[in-house]
Length: 140
Image (cartoon, rainbow, N blue to C red; front, side, top):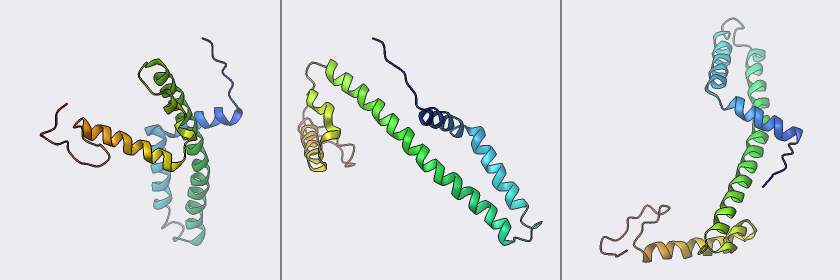
């Protein structure tokens, strides 16, 4: 099966920037910049302009990173949904209707969550979201 790969300019920039900013080296550079700014405090007598430099820089970077993070999370979420949908399709006993969970309301999702919790309890399995342990007397 062939998949068409078309990448928008924003997608390419977002992926590349996320790849670069997620590296330890990039974090080290950011720490060095902050340290250099802090060290120059006495030189500039901790002036308003000296403070404005770091405030403006961090605000702009934070503002842009919010959009970058959201874009990469949206893409990752879509990729995971497609992979899970394929797994649901491939497993014969799976309820393929679960492939469209993103179309359900919060109430419908809560109902399914409660159903799966009930099934786990009936099987004597712990609920990872509740912190409870399974009953020692329950059978598999």
